[in-house]
Amino acid sequence: MLTPEELELRRQELEEKRRRKRQRRKWRRVYYGIMIILAILLAIGTAYYTYHHGTRFSYYDTHSGSRSSGAEPRAGSRGSIEPVNILILGIDERPDDPGRTDTMILASIDQVKGRVSLISLPRDTRVQIPGKRGYEKLNSAHAYGGPRLATATVSQFLGVPVRYYVRINFDGFEELVDTLGGVEIDVERRMKYDDYAQNLHIDLYPGKQVLSGADALSYVRFRADGLGDVSLIDPAKGEYGGRILRQQKFVQALVGQALQPSTIAKLPTLLLQLRDCVTTNLPVTQMLGLGLSMRDFTGDSVVTALVPGVGDTVNGVSYWIPNQGATRVLVDQLVRGIEPVTIQVLNGSGAVGAAGYAAERLRQQGYQVVDVRDAQRFGYRETEVIVNPARWDVGTQIARIFDAKMVDGNEAETVAGGEGTYDVMVIVGENFSVP
Image (cartoon, rainbow, N blue to C red):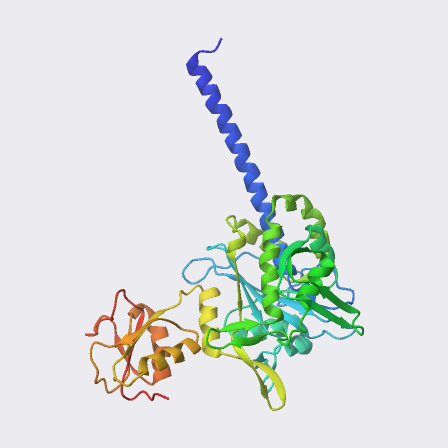
């Protein structure tokens, strides 16, 4: 018969075994969940694409021209793992024609923070394509040079390295959603549209509902609401509407559905379906490495954004004109991991509304203005930009906007008004022209 001490020891050993078993089960659940999420993120956007048959799920290195055997995540100059940027391409494929991209999304996966940023790039974005003169629509890049030129164009436009691509066609999307058991979406409005040439028939009613694969396809393809792919509906608040915004909403809902424990058993079927609708140069080892590095991934880890801008016509051609400043700030935050600067704007001239107009100019450029007020005194002849030395690069950009002189924050005599400290303080001088 065991003594009380032996019984307690046996109980502790049994509890430890149970704990390890639970931990293994949890790890497997997270691991498979991550694999599904990564696969699905690579498949988002299929709703937009062609009715032609797709290519096999293959891994092809566009840089070497040969099949890739895998690649390790690269470390940055500071020894940290850099985010992996993947361009998701939705292609309208045709025989002997690479096709134009109906949708482009940059997926930036930060393995350290466990965050995926999905930046939608409107297909009509006005950009310069490497090797071409002048400006053209972003979706022309793939038509000219396939995924290699498309990634090069996005890399040049956003100023970040984009090595990998995932090219997706229509096949398999409906089955993918149906295998997940559908996706719950709150449909915003009545969606009724018929295009007999494309055999496209959309018939959805408003309200929260679980969309089947066919209905999900209809939801993300619908654009007969006067907003098209994307429109700036409230310039003051920077709010957008259109099909791209529904796509982002669908991404969030799909991720939430894929994180359900019941999805794990469906993994083999999902992966087989992806093989039939995806072409990529992302190596399998890289994909697995990304999944393992994101053990704490949740639905909240997915951040969606849109290249800010406005629709306009240039030389008779309609474009999405990107706001370069706001785009730079967006990329700094979501891709480069640079936290947005905090800015205070002070009226140092005494002119009515001067600080407000200056703050609005900064906000239009994508900067975060957190406080606007009068300076401690008036009479500043020139506009000054007082900068925290750690954000000197951003301060330089802001100084150019106002043609202002820069002052080191450690040497400035002026202190911020109100409570708190700021990365940049703009003191509007008399040389600032108020509209």
